Length: 442
Ligand code: SF4
Ligand code: SF4
Image 1 (cartoon, rainbow, N blue to C red):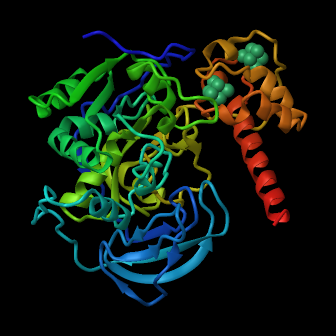
Image 2 (image 1 turned 90 degrees about the vertical axis):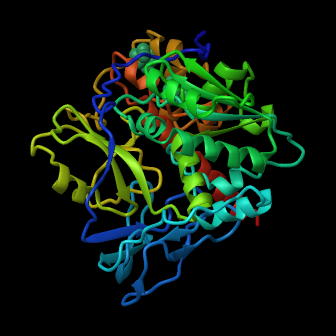
Image 3 (image 1 turned 180 degrees about the horizontal axis):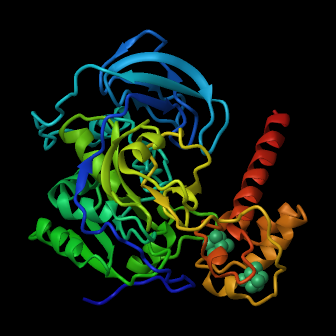
């Protein structure tokens, strides 16, 4: 099979996929669940319950507010013991619903819904009701993503099975264990978008997943499966689109500008469950892993489970390195183990060494390695200087907002400059400034 790959930059870190052979199993139900109302991009959901309320697994407890937002459901049956403000990895002072677990565990799989005669509009409504968001980390509400503007016709739907982040193997296992469900999820999306062509991209280091999906889609000429060269960030939307279709998403543009829509494997599986079993997004698969972790593996975890509950069940040595929510390249360092697993948490990775983000004693030596590996073609060394000097307007002109935060530049920098952290900060600061200016202008 001819390998597809993106053409600009990229790196090849050790893949450290220690859990690739480990089947997905259920993590224990924690005693208490903390569900934040901002597990998606857009407006936080509005809390619908109060302390003392009894809730059933799957009950709506947070209602989407506005166009870009997502519903949130109780991931366990139990009693709401508090609704309080708390911090998450990405925001401060967010409403959390705290549920003490108790009561029945629901069986979602006893009845299958036949969606063959269901309209695309109704399917979209079902996805919206289930609170599905992009589970590869982007957390953009899926019903919005699946409603591209009419003036931008879509002709290709891409399934992102690259899973290029080191350590993570949950997408790999899902493709291996649930290939028929993924193909059914693909068919649901095809029906919604009305596209005739589907391209599935999987990195070549997962030949068994390529085989499983090829078998599951046998005889369907609308579905094409491609092996991708194992190279980070092959799973970035723009990189994947370029590798598979040769189309370039323009600077500041979206995949819909080139007639493409991309969904990752975990999201497609959630769409399948939402439509076929009417199951809202109350749990997700994740990889719990690291060199020092004895019980590393792939686990199904209820949304809102505190990371500490996983640590108590699966272990973590007292002396360990940085703990990351997500993959080591694009994930965020967990600063509080009581933070919950959210809809976007694809892994908990325990690195062997502490990352020192705080101080960078080494100056930039203008080696340009960061520039060679940037998949967008930016000049990270120069952007860093501009962000350092708060010259944000110029940084934006030089492509700061096009940075996909892949971390390739930080990875190769011999001076260990935390480039991607600086770009995240710069982008956040710029967006807040723009929002404040817009507010002031009325
Ligand atoms: S983090 Fe941004 S600047 Fe650095 S390599 Fe990735 S896209 Fe380029
Ligand atoms: S890799 Fe690091 S040291 Fe080299 S040019 Fe880029 S920022 Fe400077």
